Length: 218
Image (cartoon, rainbow, N blue to C red):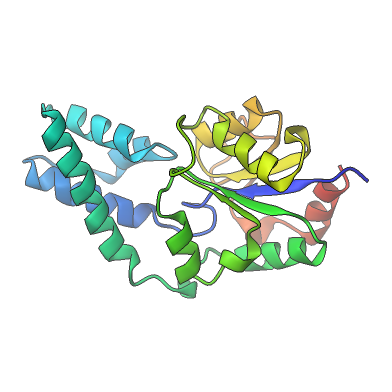
């Protein structure tokens, strides 16, 4: 049987940290004198912090020097870290732990592939770090999704061919990145938005062990 690997995005797949990102970005926007809505926050899914700030400043028609830009990047992250400091296992999304346990029981290598630069501390806080054989996050990549770099590095770290990897993603850019890497893409969330995925589920509660088993045997 061909060796397979599973790669998980973090935000919106394993935990819902999007709400904390939103609160931190909204706080910064308010300080800069404009409103930032939850609808606008959808533009930030799967996007690097630098690109998020660029989008935020465009929304508010705010110009910044490089020094201001760098300061605001740090400020937003400090606020975000203050929010996630209180995270615990109760914030793991439904049935994620079941899926991870199932894969581990089959000795399947598992990686995280996320744009977040805070992936490791978040996984530690929710007690999921031991499930992952490799963590590839915003500290390890230079190209943001939909570039497949993060997933290709993860596959290499797992010692698995890219075409034998399965990716769980909640963002269009992430699905596109998985597809660009010739990986099996599984959309977690709205199937209409994630229509480019090979498979779609609203969340992991809809994903049976039999389905996971079929992916392992690919």
